[in-house]
Amino acid sequence: MRILPGKGYVLALMLSAAFAASYAVQRDLPAQYQFYLENEEYVATERAKYDTRLIVEHELVERVDGLERDPIEMEENVRHQKQLARPGERLFRIEPGPAPSSH
Image 1 (cartoon, rainbow, N blue to C red):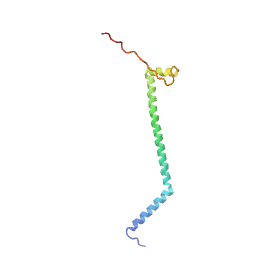
Image 2: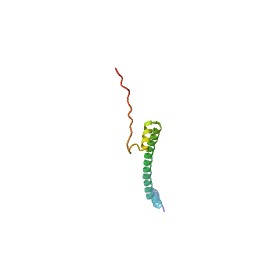
Image 3: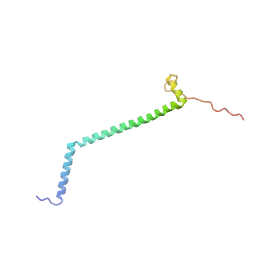
Image 4: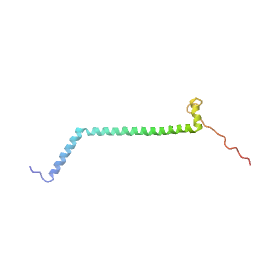
């Protein structure tokens, strides 16, 4: 049997395509790809949750640092712990300004 020039390439291409299709069916590549896409969405969702939690953690660390250094924050925390302030109430301290100078 003699194969005409150029026909061998077509035959090789057809055999390669058949092999690739058979491989995709046997390995269930479409389902595996769908699973990959679903996992990618899950990872993106979890990454967003993680980033949000990092922001909250940073805010809480700043608040704790403020409690350790700022007397007003310390007072506010004590008042809330001893229930001297209503829930959601913010406490503000108003300090007198400098005495007016006489001319």
